[in-house]
Length: 319
Image 1 (tube, rainbow, N blue to C red):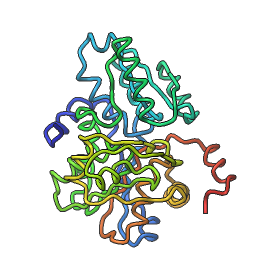
Image 2: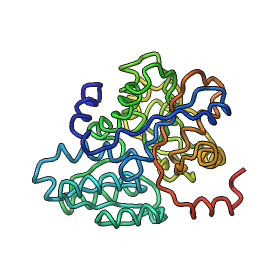
Image 3: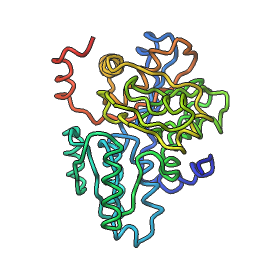
Image 4: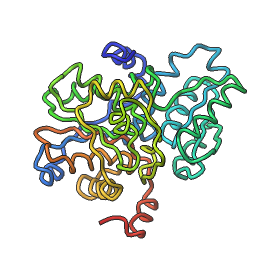
């Protein structure tokens, strides 16, 4: 359902609407890690995160009637931004179900894009239940945040760009929430360069995919706790589990403290503003004792404000 051809087809559909984001080497980070570190800067993507790729690919495949009825999604913020942006581009009504503790910066950005916002619950599975209810009641088309093969193929265009821009890459680090980004990137990278190591990075208390691998299939976590709001998924889905099991070499678990440290490390040493979810991949590189050679770190998003970072600093959570 997701392969190199579907990812290449996605790029044909969305290339005019997205940014081919920079892949830049960071000497400062390389000095610290002992490897050559390249940053794939999806924080510079439209809407400030990679999510717009999959959302655009999905919305372009809908027919006029589906767009007229409207689309709906569950999101912690960035997926909603991507769907809202794509919907506005094609004149489709968009509803986004957000957690009650939504990041206020992401909520503000969604409002500017004209999305209808519903806040409901805290965990991703509860939000999805609300989406199911509203889509039944109003006929909305769902845009799943990570388990739709069309959406996954859109996210996989990042992998195509990585290989095109750095053909001799040796490792790729990708943050994991529900698993849509790692699924698309892993398929593209491994199909083009089977020898490249693909590492997924999860918060240790929001580890739906590593739990699925341990249990032999998706399993709901009893609780989810992480400061990386974009990675807070209680359960993955079968399509993501299957792709990750086949294509991903290893999943690295990192502490919230490590994610926060990586966020400020990137800002201080590389002058890159990443939200904690986007910096988790770099925390994974720092934690990996087997790292080698040329490493690409996917900075998946940058939707965070300085005031939010200052709040984390005042809370004493940055070492």
